[in-house]
Image (cartoon, rainbow, N blue to C red; front, side):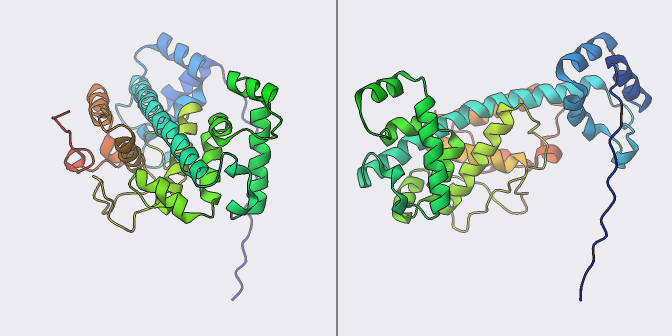
Length: 313
């Protein structure tokens, strides 16, 4: 049977830009309560209507296309959601950085000792030739353009086209590193690295993508806390060796499962971390945030092995 799809005709976007006052008036017409108009205008001016609209969306009635707000919805509450999301992203950004630095170090150490300092240049170590050549080209450009002192000194002192991996891979992006790791043929080396973090290498490949995706959301100030995230996190097919969470009916594309992966890896990198405590403080500060509906935190999340506080720290 042949199925034919009838394309929906595209429209021409012709909505005119609105002044800040017009933007606020439109929100009020749709039922939003604004207790401090001067502050609301200030926020529209400095954050933009489009950015704030992501935090207004949860307050719309069930038929979102009507653009009508639920009774009692306030501009101030939307701004509190924005502040919560901003502080949450600040919290996790610094911890992702710790995991990133650790992964750079481990990847470089394992592959350099197994092969040599320039292992990342060897085509035979990688599954996809085109992807490797593109990676190598990017590495060369980033290292050549680098203004880091060690990069400049190396270029002045040595004739080598490439720098040793412990230098070059300090300069490339985290996304670049995750692609290099995924493209490696040597599963034994990949497993040696992943075992350091307590996961199979196939799962670490996925989690690295999750980390880089989350890091980019934080760096570009996009909404994180209650969105449907575009990269689903893989479910482990094996029981993980360290404290993890019960995975029954947990959405794979919500912030709870992302934060759980960050916490699991962070426990390997920094066992005395205070991630749970800081999250708890943030949730208490913004008690208007529904972490269960918006983030898919289970009601018993603090009882999950991963999240239980170790009072002996």
